[in-house]
Length: 330
Image (cartoon, rainbow, N blue to C red):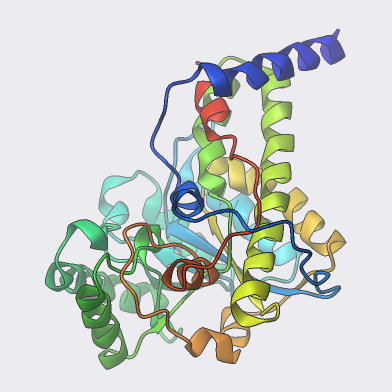
């Protein structure tokens, strides 16, 4: 009976993409829409032993909570899985305004640090650079620092992750913020692998409320399938831009569903040959010193920024599943 239910759910989902109205584009869709697909030219085989640093955005609280969970429980589960995989020192990028507005957020951040993890600056309010001045953005960075200094103590917290991976829609704004970061001792925590992992969380919470186990099973498999496709795409973009695969940085978010899926995601990465290194080790590669030096409305991963600035054709990619996900368990 369960097998029949799963099949029925899958058929329903397949029709949702065509039936749903146009929604907001993901940053990846925006990039792909702006470029012609790459001709069917074979790329070199992917490296057998790729490297990745795991990073986590939007600490200490992000996303809807499913029934019966709180921020402390999510933080405990997340650090437990990271430690079980030898990933102490993982960087989490913090918006400190959440410490005041989200119940359990201060405790969740302390749990992260007590487990031997690191923190970095993600602006105080998760400010969008494309809709604000460089001066306002820089002020938001500075306002994050007292709390980072308090919680981070002797840790190297002067790593910066742009919210939404947006580095400025104009060259002037991009250069101004880059100069500010350099002057204040920051390194930019670039990203090469990103699959918008947060997109599954709200649907997961809705399906938990409705106790729809078949839908949750579909979400879990779809999450892994999409992650695998986007990881492959990011690695192919590196080949096109840099002429080689470079050590990777993966962006995840501290949502309940990503925390639930982390064991399966790490297992999938290992099966693909990935080994894990620290953010500092990965970004010591010369590719991370390179700068596309171009404004962009949509931002994106480091190879994606180069693809756009050089008007390079993208590898072929399937549409993302986010319209289907947004309709699930409504």
